[in-house]
Length: 145
Image 1: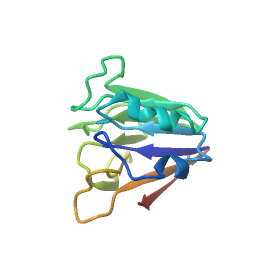
Image 2: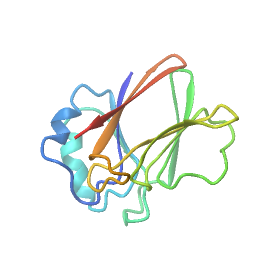
Image 3: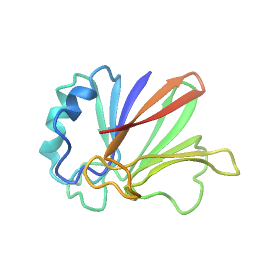
Image 4: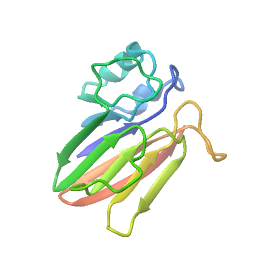
């Protein structure tokens, strides 16, 4: 399974981003979309698009978190990174910080952030990520835009 993970678009993203997401089985947006219509072009990729609500989003139909199971992994999608490691989760995917993250905490939970496609921090280029899942094996690759 190949999942495109995007966060913190804040009403804009680089031209051609949606085209680079082609081939995804799913697209996950980790919040701060801002204008819901921005996701229309992502939907044209032809795969399911899941989104969680960020602190700059006003679309109340979007959940604050999604708990998903893909392969043998339990995943939590949120905008704000939790303060503590959530129970019954193998991977936490979050946005909000606009900074790329790939860390494993002492309990073995992996924390991932694709950075921001519109306003990156930490001297990085705008980015998104590809998440590959095969059984319980996970591959995380940051793509600079």
